Image 1 (spheres, rainbow, N blue to C red):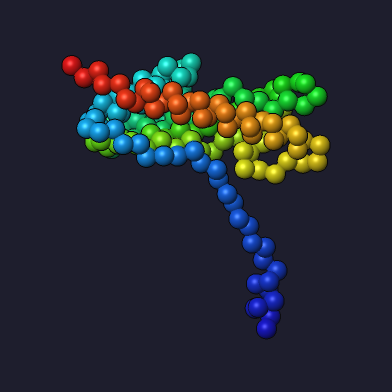
Image 2: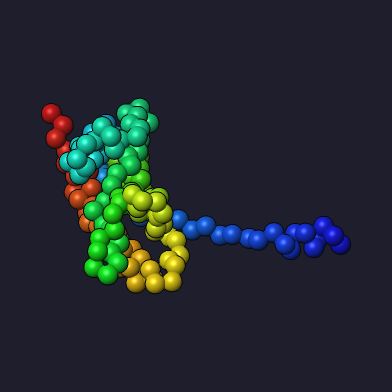
Length: 156
């Protein structure tokens, strides 16, 4: 009986992580071309690709980048002082690729952060929801640009 009671005291947590992900068919494009297009897109999208790219493996066709978005929460008309981070994974195979935008959060320079799937505190709810909307719009725009860039077939 004591064991059952102890189990009831353990809280259950569900952690949800919103992902923006899709597998995109590209007809007969080679993995090497898709991989190169993914690297080119990251280079053109972020100021310093060398700092953003965490992993690139041509053999497996996988690229992982951690970059900063433009979105920031505002409170009483003042933009939050910090950075909005996102992890982008592009996995390439012959004829298709998969993109994933995950781990989205805003980190204040002075400490503290917003997680995209987090719960805002009290008076921050409006600011938080507006920030989430801005982030969603920004990521969807990035996905549109990525899809266009991935279709380029500049193979000589």
